[in-house]
Amino acid sequence: MSYRSEAEKALKGVAASFINSQLGVSASSKKSKVEGRAVFEEILAFLSIEAKTPEDALERYKNIQRHHNHILGRYFRNLYQALKIIDGYEENKLTYEEKRKYSSILRAQLSTKELALLFVNCLDGVSDSGQFKNLLVEFQMLEHLPIQKRKNGYSLAGSKIAMASEDMLLQYKEKKNIGVSLKKYYGGAFGTNGGVPYNLSPNKSMQPTADESAD
Image (cartoon, rainbow, N blue to C red; front, side, top):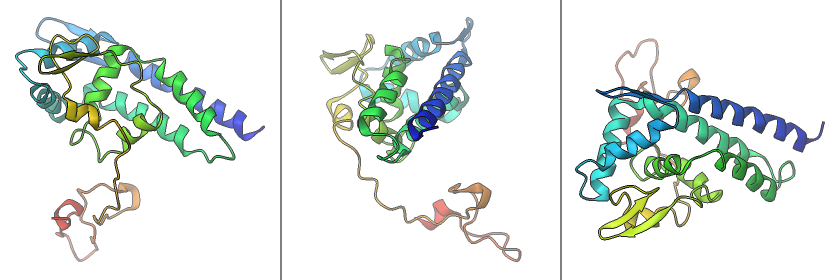
């Protein structure tokens, strides 16, 4: 079997897993339980309530991620991993044109509401240090996101208020230079989990964590 056949088989499996994860997304409100893609519309509506600026809506989204990460966390992690797999293939195994082909197939699975929340999710200071956003830039994942100019910014996917500012849009113009992290990590099964003291040893039970050592 060729590398391309293997890649296509793997990517189809990831796509299937990603689509299944969409069906499992659910959120509860005081009135009812919302499931599936309706969750994204419900969240966009929530972000718009009494939000006077895009920054207000962004703070509301950050609050959701801090206290209710289970709603969208798995969904966006699956999407990130799918793009990471596509991007990770070497050129001699999967050409850039083929990577664009598979990322376009993945993008076609997303509704405009999902694209809007994807935009918000990958803004600076929300999910990671820019790795996810760089993949969105690389594969032009927001190409079909409806954007309309408003008085105080830009609406996304028909949102009632401005969900994006010009500064937010500029973040997606080009890849972010992430640089080299100076944090030290314990490693092992914990990988880059900053909650474990990086120099933990049998006779040292209390040591600075990776996050503390970077301060």
